[in-house]
Amino acid sequence: MNSAMRSIIWASALFASATIITVARADAPSPSRPPIDKCVWERLTDKNVGLAAWAQRCDFGFRQIHFEFAGNALAIKYSDGGAADPLVEVFDIISGETAEAALQRLFLQKTDKAVSARCVLAPYTEGTVPAGVKRYTFSPDAAYAKELKALADPNEVPEPPCGDWGEMPDGIQYFEVPAGEGHKLLFVRIGQDEPLFDEQTLQVLPAS
Image (cartoon, rainbow, N blue to C red; front, top):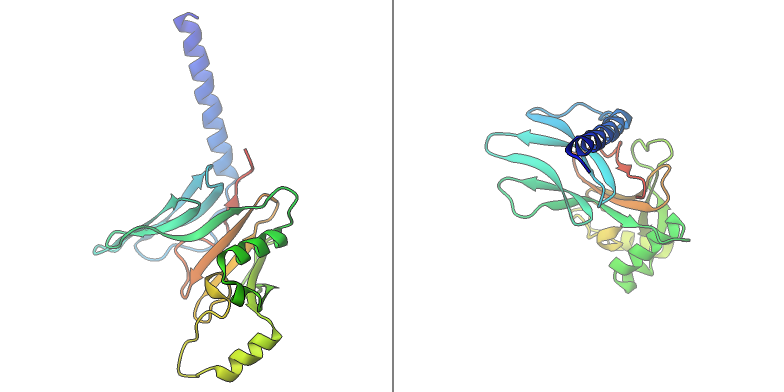
């Protein structure tokens, strides 16, 4: 192959690559809210994780905050902290498995059996849920909820009744089944305050 032909092929490859990037950016939703002071939105995409998200990069002088992909997750990183903390984890739905069955499987894998046996899958309906998206949590069954209510101390924040992968008494977290894609699901940790990532526009990337 002569040098002229190699140049043509290389230029064509660059054009194709640029076109794919341009289309992906044009199709990306805009952030659902303005950034907070000292922060800017940036679009992060990782094909290996299978997720695209808007996240804020912040510079408060004494502390900088950014997001990165780590393992199977979109994670937040503080300049004065340690390792990045996963906030949006991505999990596979096994071929032939429904999203709800995948949620049950993951919950059972990650939760003590004595606890998981007393918790049930329930829709998570707090806040605004984007069109086509389904959100779920694991909550105490009726008997367990009655028992917890009887033992509750109004002066203390209780432990998560269904473990670290169920509903939180002092924060927000849930499983999310994205719209239009049936091969992945998400576990989203919001916390107590409005997150620095945009939970309303998370996108699972098409399977490659």
